[in-house]
Image 1 (cartoon, one colour):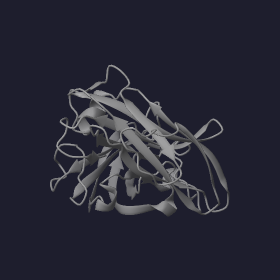
Image 2 (spheres, helix red, strand yellow; image 1 turned 45 degrees about the vertical axis):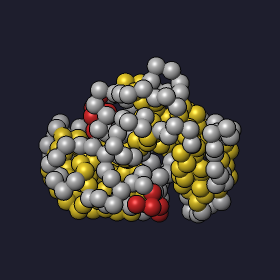
Image 3 (cartoon, helix red, strand yellow; image 1 turned 30 degrees about the vertical axis):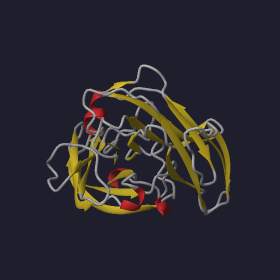
Image 4 (cartoon, one colour; image 1 turned 60 degrees about the horizontal axis):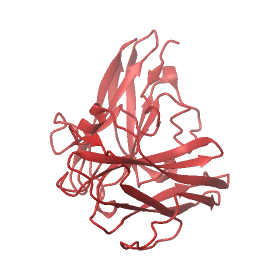
Amino acid sequence: MAVDLLIRDGDPHWYLSPDIWVVPGSDPAGSPGSPVAGQSAYLWARVANNGSTQANGVRIDFYWANPALQVTRSNATLVGSAYADVPAGGQQNALCLVPWVPVIVNGGHECLVAVANHPGHSLPSPLPDAFDPPTYPQVAQKNLTVIQAMSARALMFTLTVSALPRVDKTITVTAEVGGKLDEKTLLGLGLKGFKPARKSIVEVGLSDAPRTVCEKDSIGEGRLKMQIPKGTSAGLHVAVRAKNIAAKEYQFIHIVERTGQEVLGGLGFVVVGNASTEKETAA
């Protein structure tokens, strides 16, 4: 293939791309880290060209969306674009010069998507509403959030579940606890030196209705079936409760949306203790 662009998906979780990262603050050349709601940050993506011809003028579009599992174009917002010349058999880091300011209403918890555009390796026209990174190698998504555990009270998060414009959606959402992050990802989140917790110390519950979960309340279900009419969205409410997370330890949580065995999307939470970071952040 003359031009064969790639922004890598995560492995094994495709919605955790290692090729999208954030630099918080006013210096785009600074260290990767976790942005803060209401403060400027810069978005980067790494684009590879596995083809035999140099790809000049590749446009990389960057999007953010409210915390969601399957991110679509209709529920995402364009931040801006970057341009890069990507040599055959090589790769190039691309910076979006338009600063991104995570919105305070979500505490900075947003999802990021990067799309590489070039005539030699084009996307379908018209574009499908779903970004669908597993199908398109030049599209990648990063849904990864760092949260601080409270001593007793459950933290509550609302995620968006959307159906495509022409098809009703029937899905199963599961909360899956456990797993390990590579050192590069931890460094990018400001969690250098952190290790997986030695035992499962996090509870996760799902609901399709808003609720409050106190210390002695049931956390909720770990699996939830949802039906979303075509062209609409619904809220998925996630409760996370953790106790006694040791310093420099984390517990990894995935909230995964499936239809049958197919993974439509997901979001990762990295849960750390109160003293582990100064404030709640997202990436």
